[in-house]
Image (cartoon, rainbow, N blue to C red):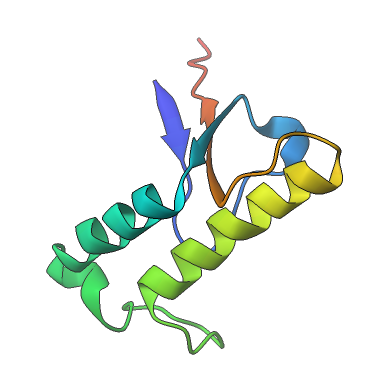
Length: 90
């Protein structure tokens, strides 16, 4: 199972196990998908000190991840969605 973080936090880069590049068009599709969810469309229920709307946080986080990868010398993308595996421990 792949774990995803919401608009508030991203995985530390050394914990990212799958990075999915997003084109500008895919980022627009993601924004539209966010708008389809009433709970995420306007103000998030627990925004803290951050005044940005949910979709703005999500896009900024995805762009920051892409910039981080670019700064490491990897390929440049508009945005990157990051995931890591869930490991069930007995």
